[in-house]
Image 1: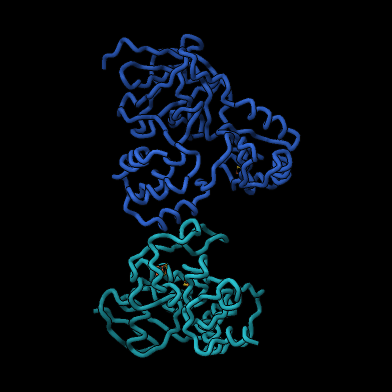
Image 2: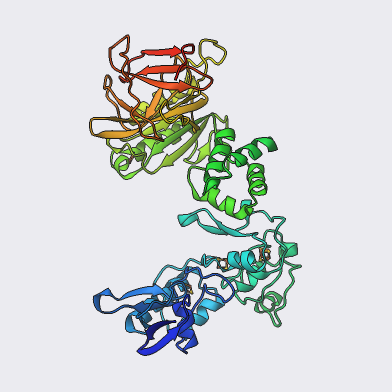
Length: 225
Length: 282
Ligand code: SF4
Ligand code: SF4
Ligand code: FES
Ligand code: FES
């Protein structure tokens, strides 16, 4: 067992537990975005920041990837953590303001402003879909491509590949949802009920036959008018 | 494209860790780019998912998924070259070729790329054409470089000339092959050795064609410098004792596969060399 202090509370956890798991187990909430039980931790979104150490040596780390250490002092809601978390949300909001998940996060954490240029990206590169596809669906159909500015997520060669089973797992987990794996073939598209209102919902002509589970669907309502 | 070729390449690298990059390098050396089908075959043969392979292929700038032209022209836009006016050279090249960086001319002659530092900053701005480095390039020199490339910088290569033939050499100490199959000079795998002179230390690539002496190197080596040659595998010094018949500097012996020894002069620019395929006794 490993002994550590979370927000002043002395606790002990099993070896290999991450700070996130430990904090959540003892009832300290930490918001997450790119973390999901059953998928390997990835540490892409930085939303789960916590402060560890003391004095000038204190630093921010992502709790979903940081393993519990003996004697570690963790703060999950210090002023520094809250500030960093708000900044992360603000940046996410600038990247994909249309995402329902991110909007909810912003309202839950009282982010009232967004000072950066809006991008309307259709992906925040959280890697959830690729991990879902690989680790739970065993399909390995989509993944990261390119690097730097050009990094993107999708299928090799941007064409629909044979290994994808159209299970919809990737759409289900995506916080930004753009029918990543099927949008190249509108007639096979499936709505994941993400409420993000992306092109498939709005480009009526092309995605007319899309399976949609939303009832009522905002986009469809708009469409009727 | 032959399935066997890819299978052979995969087989060759199957034991080394991180072998994927070596495999892709070998495939690219063969086809000059990474064809879609080749990547699929690599995925099939290695058992790795295609996404992972595609991810690696698109991550590194060295790999190209589009067919490339006959000549590859890279213009350095690294910091040092940038401040010495490299952007204007890049613009001039783009204008003369009529394509933007990353594109290939419609006649499939040139592929134009920009790179971020080639490690030869002191000589900048640098333009590299088919492995030949041009230093201190001015916009006015671009035309000349393109002309030279069109004529063939590796000209003089006569594959049908029976006096010119490729050698496969190895280190006389550790017997590791010195051939580098990822870099071709004169259309054949080059010979890669480590050299040092003064305080400088780096690699040198030689043409494997006997009787030809084009070379590329990491540092600018002044003419007539006597170099110390080392094996890149066992790091043993290769300079021998017998003097060059032309200039008197020490000769560097290397083993020839199939028997025999080839000796080259250690002085940069000296053309002295001896090929002895008879007296093999080690
Ligand atoms: S729908 Fe296709 S790409 Fe998406 S998780 Fe399922 S198999 Fe993977
Ligand atoms: S497509 Fe969605 S789940 Fe996949 S990386 Fe982008 S934002 Fe994350
Ligand atoms: S949840 Fe930890 S970095 Fe995204
Ligand atoms: S910046 Fe051009 S070679 Fe380094």
